[in-house]
Image (cartoon, rainbow, N blue to C red; front, top):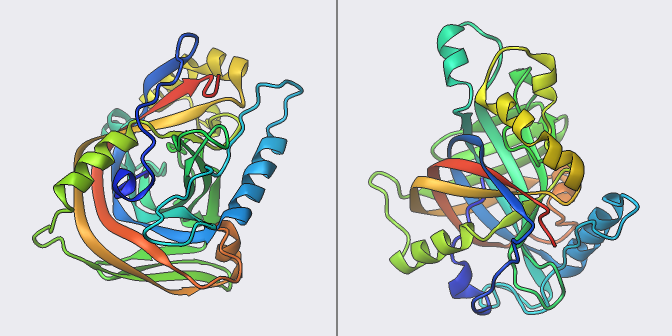
Length: 310
């Protein structure tokens, strides 16, 4: 889930900007659901992130000049929290549930289809479309989920979904394991009752999240719909966007909007992280530096925009 908090307060002010949407299409409600989890930013070398962004650009080559391009912005991001040669990477642990299969689940209570479960997402936030551009883009790096969930729709549809052996989460911590590799975190959540984030932070969060255009896979992953013939909103939307996806891939991005959002003060500490997970979050051999964190829950809707960059 793409929570963005403490952003406009802590990063350089970019002022008012507009995206030319004269020829762009934004299809609302392509996926809907709910999220409850822990979100935090870690500090990573800018060079490591730009290297990843350059590889993303090359991998999206389609023989034309309209493939998307992403940059670490020229200005420092979160300058009060880390050095100018660093950039944040966003991680969230939590429970995701799709609302696009409610009718099917009611009619088939014993189905083996999994539409909810624990997930861990990794994203590079606050990216620009040009070196001197505003930070309005993001790049989805990974969405970890348990192999034991079996057949499941990938409702966060531009993320690369990565199966792992185990994800566990409690009120005090979480762990994700794959073979001998592990990422383990502990947290202190002020949720009983919830200690809210500063009101100005909430305002800035709501403003920013509606301007975040997230790239990822060249096109949405609807392989689940190819395997199942029953009706669902998720697969109906796959048909609704099919022509636009075929025309504009890989210049596609998803945009989140949240309803009934709740944010609570939380502290997070990474207790253990091995090399496989370090590679995914672009940390290398650096020490872990958590910049900001929170508990976040909401109902959400995901829109698809194409072309994303014009």
